[in-house]
Image 1 (tube, helix red, strand yellow):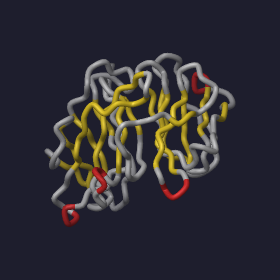
Image 2: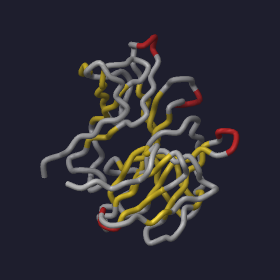
Image 3: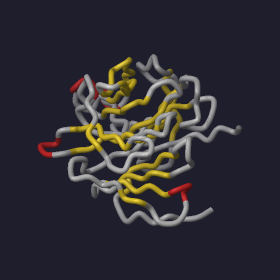
Image 4: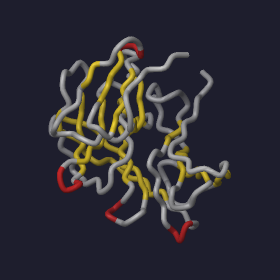
Length: 216
């Protein structure tokens, strides 16, 4: 076990399945990547993509992030596999409030804390990439009847048959803490979504993120 220092306000991390590189985003606009999760990181920060939410690699080693810019507009930025800089990538749908990115075994997914433009309504968008940018393939609403029917999930984690992003089959369950209904972690069917199938109570703390480690 080792500790890699990234400063403050880290958002989340992701491992490149093609190289073993580790990427960490921060709200200071830094995207740090450690080669094989060792040594000193290379910084891929960009003025065009500040305030970076949790990054996610796809199965080909392309790295995606959601980033806040001026007037709180959300951009999707990409560090292509083997690339040297972050670049804004076009998408044919809108993310209203930033959150994390994750490979689900079939699609690269983008979470939204204001799903469909609704306040405190969480969800996940599934997308594919082509020469024109990102194309929406589907979406999953993460509802919750508790907390006055509000749902705010910052870091949904899609559980596959292998540890992400080595999954090669779309996950069946997504888990996450609903910050509008504290002290619970919800389990939703994926990609169906809707209301949780079940929930577990957590200690008397706010849970921001959760992960599942698959024994391989």
